[in-house]
Length: 150
Length: 84
Image (cartoon, rainbow over the protein chains, first blue to last red):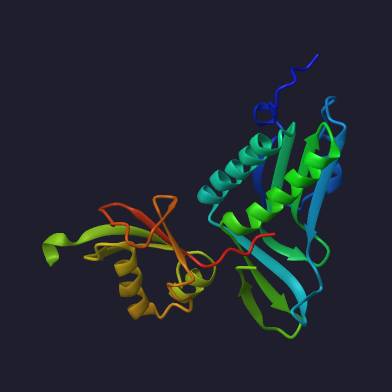
């Protein structure tokens, strides 16, 4: 019988990662297991075809990785502590992404849904505002721009 | 003052990287704080990001702009983040 205390931060599939490769959400969900969990909440951020009225062709992400990994781990640790969830994981994509590809995946395992939804929301909001990752939008008209602070 | 000059490592990402044209370099500077260093480099490279909306990391930690810069420090200017 597993202990009742939140110990997600010590388990191997908690944490924050950056990936140059395509994020396979189905594979991540399939291996994201904990028999104590009655809820699995996940969020995918995907590349959308329009932003502020402009047609997007592709996105490019880059990070200040040393700081991003540390800050991302901090966000995960805070979510586990604050919401009492079992495990949390977040993976953010880097490099060039096509429309529809997954830019970020967040998964939370919790005993009940309330803390799972809250923790998932907390993680994506904090990652967007605190983790040094930048996005460049390349538009179908051929121009491009760095997008930040949203 | 030449005696106060120190060697500082700079890394550039995103808009700052494009404005500067390189990802990293080492410079000699007499700037005392991160803010002074920004102003010194801005006058040379005309960064498109105002200091008011940028932040700065020294040795992989986000710090206030008045943080002093020492020999061998790594300084990174940060435009607003755009993850997610």
